[in-house]
Length: 151
Image 1 (cartoon, rainbow, N blue to C red):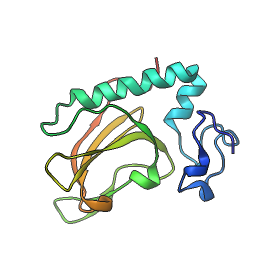
Image 2 (image 1 turned 135 degrees about the vertical axis):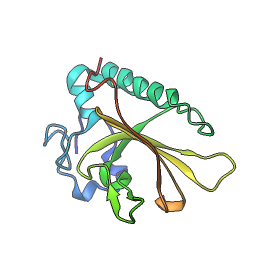
Image 3 (image 1 turned 30 degrees about the horizontal axis):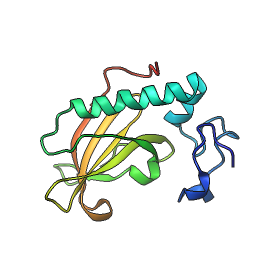
Image 4 (image 1 turned 45 degrees about the vertical axis):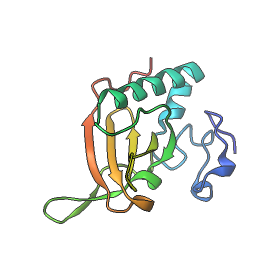
């Protein structure tokens, strides 16, 4: 399959459910892909500028024991959309399984837990979880101040 951003589809665990990036104009699972939107808006330079802006936003959160974020990569919503327990015991998901976000996993120092980082044009999410996403907890979920501006 051809992609808009040049990612290698052969290594994707979701390739069997994908409708194709170029075939769907950047909506391979039905929802928006932030990487494809950047490439359509202004090419590779736009994507790297956008990614740098998100990295800076994550680092500006100054989460005490979170190592500096140095990279982000496209991640399927179905992969990163964890279910969080609310105080009343109900469980809820905050993301959209059909979207492609930019995110990354950062190991938490001196712990067996990790930080999961996910962003799109509207929100930043930082969570903490154990092995294979076990017992996720939201650290920060906030509306982005700069929305949808790729440049």
